[in-house]
Length: 117
Length: 109
Image (cartoon, rainbow over all chains, first blue to last red; front, side):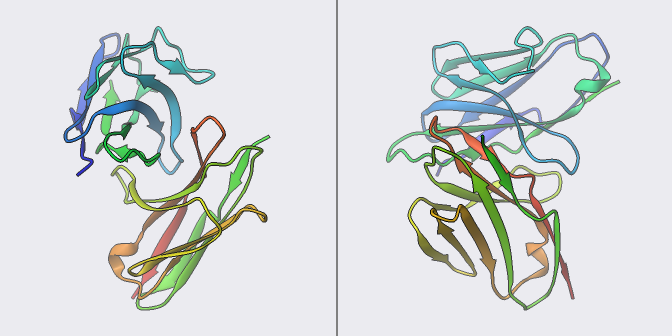
């Protein structure tokens, strides 16, 4: 149980375009979803926390107008990177927590590698 | 303030035992997690300690001392597939995870 999927796994886009990444909890209802960014050989950097039906809470330094997060249901959250630039190239990982027998453990999706050319 | 620290890299031999330490400072604490992350993949959950003591799960064990702000992950009978980064993270008073930078574990034959 506690499976989180992410789509796409890899995406290459041109500078100036927007990219949407989906995160789904497949077998539980995620009350909270998290979006992380990870640079090579670095630790996870939390970008934002989203609760179903409410606005995401962004970490300091993360532009909310550039990284649009929608958590429309208990099983789906999306991250849209708007007007992408090469410096946005990174590994984006979502995680989710919640469900029956709630624990504070976060279950991670497989990640999305974004390359902006 | 809050901070968390773990060694950047460790090397061990196949079949041996290795202990990865993690120290932290925080005013609010709701448990400590260990995750394993292979290169290019997302982290996978290993353990969660909220009370002092040792939790054993197969070849992996995790220890916590809240008074010392200290945890370790113990890996026994090391296998080549254990080569990965090991991330420790504590949960703060807001139930947010504060992540360490990760310890890259290199296993040699």
